[in-house]
Image 1 (spheres, rainbow, N blue to C red):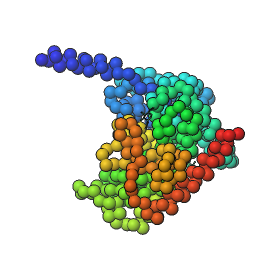
Image 2: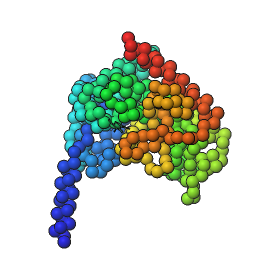
Image 3: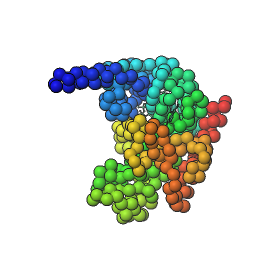
Image 4: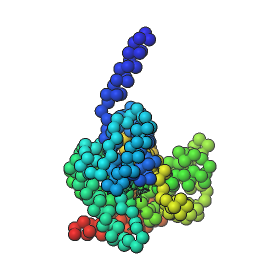
Length: 350
Ligand SMILES: NC(=O)c1ccc[n+]([C@@H]2O[C@H](COP(=O)([O-])OP(=O)(O)OC[C@H]3O[C@@H](n4cnc5c(N)ncnc54)[C@H](O)[C@@H]3O)[C@@H](O)[C@H]2O)c1
Ligand SMILES: *[C@@H]1O[C@H](CO)[C@@H](O)[C@H](O)[C@H]1NC(C)=O
Ligand SMILES: *[C@@H]1O[C@H](CO)[C@@H](O)[C@H](O)[C@H]1NC(C)=O
């Protein structure tokens, strides 16, 4: 009997080692978000404990020596699932046969740089990387854009990869989502995981609208509507929203660096949900390509919506009541994104 069990173990071990690795790209791989992110991905937190991984790391040429250090550390983690690490400054190497692309690297704002020039530099990066996805990646690749301005960069990448369905592109607003859950949780003295179904609408910026009208807080074993659990409408309609909207700036002010650990955690949450689905009855926020005027959001934007995910495809949650308070804030964020899209498309044309 023991022999049979041993044999079964051997077989399972063999099957695991033999499972086809997925190819996962992280761009901006020498940067601070990547430094917090790569370990979680490589050790199986995102794609499962039995899914071998090949990591592809892209950064710009001057950062290749730094990237060598990151590769050494990944090797030194001695992880069972990490089959190979490739570091490169070449898109044709980085984007080859990808299953997942996490686009973190982008042009940072430098002192004295005009907004339009910054946008233009990012449009150039995401046009080129979208083209590389189109040419080299698998057609089923899942693309997550993190580098700012994330919504518009995501739109440009999707438009530059016409052979890949637009639904396969999303941008990160999960950090904002997690921030909103935590603010409510702290207020109610419950763990953040007891707060469900907050929504981030719009752009990943200070015009985003963190909406708790559909949020539930699990307190003493039952799910309460957020307004009943918090019992402070003025806070929920005022300081709560401002705190979530300004959180990125507050972290920069305190740390003199932008959010990295929490951004990496949010990337993992976002991708794990894409890979394995969201729990029944729950939704999360992510920036997706807008069609069909859902909730009055104009078409052809990457806008953050509440979504549910099943079998690796997402669906915008239907039928939520939107009051005037919410509607005006959702519209303001959409207006901002339209302006940015049009500016981005005009620089794309020249
Ligand atoms: N959506 C979100 O919630 C969210 C949250 C936090 C940060 N961000 C954004 O994520 C990005 C990365 O943040 P970070 O703290 O890691 O920055 P960082 O400056 O530490 O690292 C960025 C890395 O990207 C690289 N890079 C620049 N252009 C590149 C290109 N064309 N191809 C490949 N790599 C390139 C840089 O060389 C650098 O190593 C920033 O744009 C930041 O604003 C987004
Ligand atoms: C992505 O594209 C493939 C087909 O190429 C499809 O099966 C999948 O459901 C799409 N959706 C998402 C969310 O990635
Ligand atoms: C949208 O959000 C991004 C990310 O914070 C920001 O860089 C960009 O300026 C915002 N767009 C506008 C038009 O303000």
